[in-house]
Amino acid sequence: MTKVEATKAAKKLLKRMKGRNWELRVWDNLGWHYCVECTPREDVWIGCYPTFRNDHKQVYVHDKPVRLAYYALVGSGRGRGWGPWTTQSTHTDPNEAVDIELKSAKKEATKIMQLAIDAELAIKK
Image 1 (cartoon, rainbow, N blue to C red):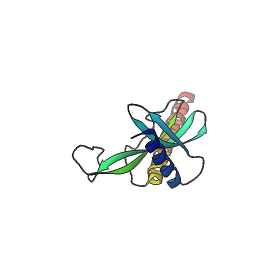
Image 2 (image 1 turned 180 degrees about the vertical axis):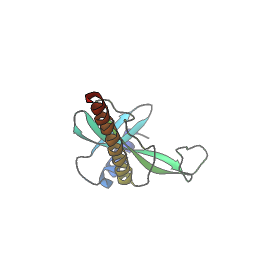
Image 3 (image 1 turned 135 degrees about the vertical axis):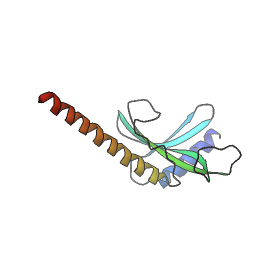
Image 4 (image 1 turned 90 degrees about the vertical axis):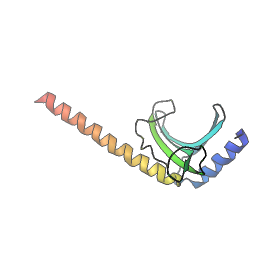
């Protein structure tokens, strides 16, 4: 994929995204890649990335018919990469990938909050 092709694909993905504040991102890392991201704060981001999957819903390309799918990540910090919450699932609708990832992040955040409350109560007893 060339930079021009990645930029074109990113713009196409951007048009499919629901909500606001999505921005396209194109970068070179042994080939051109793209995604859309939303950064509500400097230290928080969510991204939706393209990938390929075959009819068995695996992320392999070798000798299989593939189709474009999407996965989403929620992360914190300035770096990009695998976020602390990830469902490790792919979806043909990028908005579905984002919705499922956000639900997963909220579920994990609730668990962490309950752990902190329980620990605090145990200390104060």
